[in-house]
Length: 142
Image (cartoon, rainbow, N blue to C red; front, top):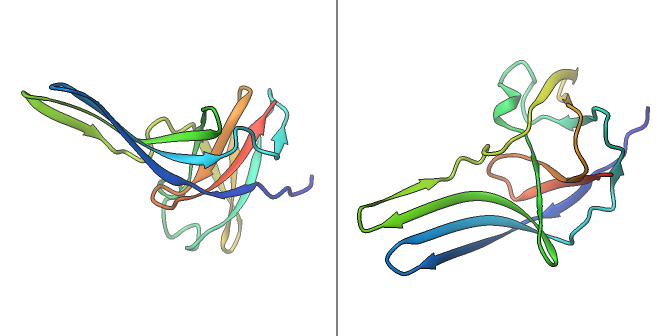
């Protein structure tokens, strides 16, 4: 029935690498705090309304919006954006910004807005974001 604003945060990039001859790398967005003040109940689909930069019929919205579950750290929430592995024999990197994205559906809400519908979400912390923007919209499910 009513619209609730999500927690808006600007994530900062955190990079880590470990190893000597064989290296493991990870880059993530770190989001302040371990829990969003915006909470929803589990075991029910959620609906979000977002303003689109383009008319909804002009582009595929699934390439602009992603829903992902966040990992909880000591003082932050984390969203992994790149993982890599390097050895003397070669290296691999996965920087697909849609990795681990949860399924969502899109319907037109108005001329320049979309309604995003999730499936049932398990308890945890989540972020709705664009692939290359560091602004994330967070919420929690209890």
